[in-house]
Image 1: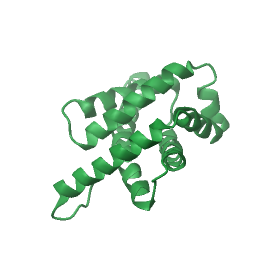
Image 2 (image 1 turned 135 degrees about the vertical axis):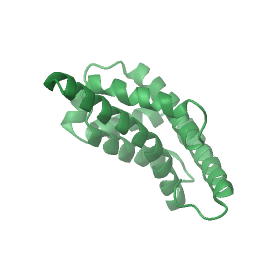
Image 3 (image 1 turned 90 degrees about the vertical axis):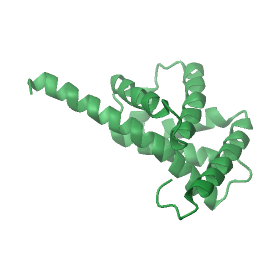
Length: 156
């Protein structure tokens, strides 16, 4: 949560507290995960094709865990960023493009907006920032893995 003011620790703690409360409310909606994946796959045929033969129950469990890890990364918990880098690297095998992370974030925040009855513009910003922090770590790892793979193929 960059660019915070002098009370940044307190502000960040309050923002994370609001995020967690919103996440709890949103995920209390039994349709949250289905709504997210429906929204995400509807964004483009390319995204839909990535999930064509996926075990959706397994993906939903992983999403719940990933959201928790993203909040830990924002809170600078030891190991959270390394786990997110691991996730970023593993997404390469699914032919995920870095731009897909932006679509994922848009779908996730839109789903939270729809499922959290207390969602407001401040929560929209908080969700976007918390998720962006985790996504940026994953995207960087994905891009680094792609560069390393390209270098191996070209012999550089």
